[in-house]
Amino acid sequence: MTLLAGGDLAVEGRQRLREVLAEAGGVMGSGRSAGAAGPRPVTPFGSAEPVEGDDIAAVPVGDPLEGSRDAAFADGIQRYIVEGRIGVTPIVRAHVGAAVLRRCDRVLHPVQYEAEEIIVASLDRLPDRVVAALHDTGFTVCDCGVGDREHPILDVQLAVQTVEDRRRRAELRVVTAFRRAFPDDWMVIDGSLRPYGRTVRESRALGVIKSHETQFFAGRDLEIALTLPEGHRTTVFRRTQESYDTILSWYVRLWDWAGEDILFGLLRLECEEGEHVIGEVNDVCRWMLAERAPIATPDGRWDRLLYPIREVESYLRAKAGSWW
Image (tube, rainbow, N blue to C red; front, side, top):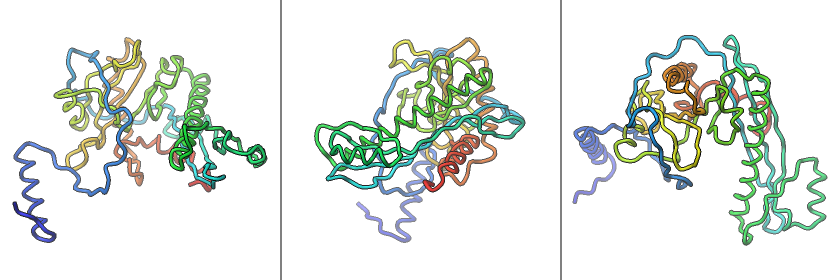
């Protein structure tokens, strides 16, 4: 066995490795190093069935649509800090916000917004006088409950779950309020449509999923979905792990992933099932391709972050002030 050290030997070994990948028909990665793989996905596997044909296939969608489509874009943010501890119980202060920006004639305007500053703690573990003092701060005080035993890390995670829940509720409220005011507008929601009711979903709502924690396919179907060329989509499918699912989904590749990670530029889109879906899916994908410009830099997620969604996040951060 040959051990390669640094310098020329490492360069030579890397070149040989890349030659092996090329000869095997592989696609080169970015070459960027990492120190850890990150946390294991909570829900790594799901299942799906095709609803557009009998098999999962790659479909070219055509050129990006010209001009910008009038539409609304929704997202939320959260940030937290452990302000201190009473004994070992953490006292968490957090900011959550959500907004909808509506684009008309190429200009985005905020039409729905809400935010709150909260304190989160396991209130049953605190003396009554401390709980009363927390209420006197003027912040909304939220009880995150208690775990089986006190734990300095798990207790913070429990508090953060409450923060996330408050953010999701805020997102639901602003999206629902927007839909009541503008029932016919297209609305692009950052994330899955599943938390939203049928009233929201049935009216030109599109969920945009940037992360790919759950994989719905295996074998050749998975390879087709995750190695889509730029400007291609998968055929439409329905997730099957939930009964009576009425949401359809498909993948689309915004940017060429050669030289990058396999998930580079890959989105999964969702919409409510309906007779119009299959007929409009290519136009929706061409619309998403058009949303690549302007590029959402300097955000590290720019390859999957639509610029209008980035503008919603920027608006929320500006409103949050010193938190960002």
